[in-house]
Amino acid sequence: MNTYVVLAAGNGVRLWPITEHIPKVMVRVLGKPMLEWICEGIDRDAEKIVLVVGAKKEKVEEWAAASRFRSKIVLVEQSERLGTGHALLQAEKEIKDDFVVLNGDNFFGADAFGRIASEGGYWCFSKKVEDKRHYGVFETDSGRLKWFVEKPEEGGPGLANLNLMRLPKEFFGYLRKLGKSPRGEYELPDALLAFAKKKDIVVHELETYWSDVGFFWNLLDANAYAAENLMDEKRDGEIEKGAIVKGKVHLGIGSVIKAGTVVQGPCYIGDNCAVGPGAVLRPVTVLEGDNHVGVHADLKNCLFMRGADAHSAYVGDSVVCGGVNLGAGTRTANLRFDEEPVDVYFRDKKVNSGKRKLGCVVGAGTKTGVNTSINCGVLIGENCRIFPGTVVGKTLDNCTVWKG
Image 1: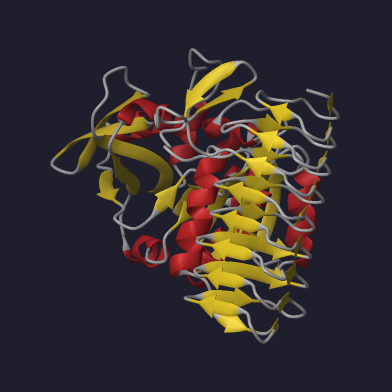
Image 2: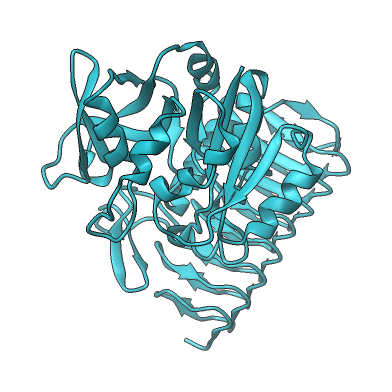
């Protein structure tokens, strides 16, 4: 049995507006917070789970108090955002011996946690990536850690640091000796390198699925992976005569798939949803619960958070947050004319998604009028009002009234 330190203090700025009122660890995959997926994975091997909380900590505290893992959970706070090394230091008083540290806002494949529990000694896990410029990467010698580079300028494949490590109690001494990095933080990999000069750190490669869920398209991918590989298939709701349901589908209690509707799995339909009549849900659509998908609506590779509704709309490759109402005729674009990867603007900073097909994010409580069009890569904040017949082609801040 191990003590696990789960870093859960991050804000998730790059997931705005999804994270406007929740920390990143509470962002949901198939209706369940990523932190809960983590705790389920480590539960069998965990004697104690230390959660390091920070941004919007009350949301994590509420979840922990109601969680079935509450007897194992200890909460400690990182009051200042000073990096992963500083976050881990907050857990020192709760550690008596060797421990495992990992990020609570990452999503792992089904086999990951069994592999973690089976490895002895001191180690860190990596994931082979095709473009190492987006990650901190390890350099190794005969499988041992030798160096670490944060987001190297030169591209190509590399071993990305997952911030998943097994370490001894004495490691905290290395953390306390850290100075601040150029970005003003105490970096966990810096202490790891210092420790690796004294003792061997084995770098294991994780072969199963992993995502840092940094952007909304990563969240779509995580939901798709979970629906295909981790979802319990069940039909607890009602399927009316004339509806067609194909493939792997989770249909929650109190939900109904109405006549003339086509559901092409894998799809996740939570509790108390109404789909149709005559609607189409294509792979991989996730309705978290309390959703209404109206007549002739067409959803493809979407995440509709709890209470989001769509009336005769087309929504593709998009995230629609809770309480959104998409008026009849609302359409989301998801493909550029030149078929190049879609760019997304975060506070005037352009990010290439790498996705040929990508839609938008619509923030919680936003309402669109009839015949609204939303361009690919657009972020719409919370509680916006989009006038009928308009085209949204840029990021909109919270509470924007958009008249085109």
